[in-house]
Image (cartoon, helix red, strand yellow):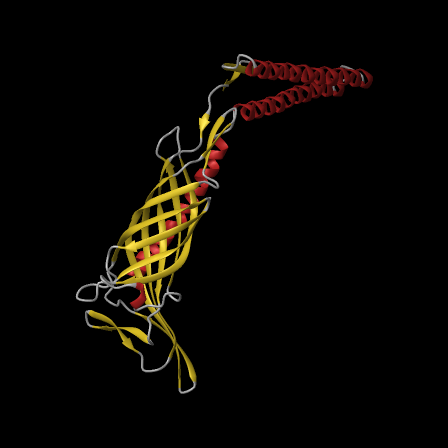
Length: 349
């Protein structure tokens, strides 16, 4: 069942990233400044003028060719008429583009002076441009989140000094996609971060021990041979939610107000909830001179639901990150061990 959940979620995660990418591209295409919209309109109208005059010239030249074939006019008269028509339509193109350019100049001049609202157009077609409207940044943005560091697990009354797991050898890794939404439209001091993350929590037992499952009990037991490696890993799929506070730099342009948290202090606090999607144990040892590597997959009586508290504090893209599982790793009647992690988190904006 956990395998099915993993692959379904992975597929949905991939589709979600594709949709976010497509939405961002579409948003960028729609959110043009008034200047860009005016230039785009000008180029389209200019191309249209040229195409229309060329089409008229082609049609009238066909009429002249028909008159020449029927003997109505001579070759010399046909060449003369064609030359006159070419000069006429070239002049039409030149004049119409000049009119369009004058309209653009009028738009720019009014935008720089009174600048409230203006419309430009050609042949009854009008482009409306709101000069003074300023747009705020997109309320919601998204980015890749990566975190890594030290991992361990303790029960009530236990300290790191007498932990059952190696301090340096036990590590965690997290990767996911997060969305950040500005809570208030015109200020950015409070944001909400939420997303989807994979957590990989590793524990390396001390004293040459491994986890052993016996019915509904899971406990650490000394291995019969000398271990080169003993590592227990839990894979979780979670939905993290954090409230993020901190200053941001406000940049104002002619058409946009932008908030940036680049190289700014940020504090995030919240939690996460999700599912345990797999556990495994890796062993390395020598048996009669032969090197043996084992990967043991089992349930190990772990809890299927995962939930906890997490927080981060830092400057810019890198922050100090900590998380604590409120749920015990193992179900009753086993020891009430709680996993916790401390490391660095990177928000790849």
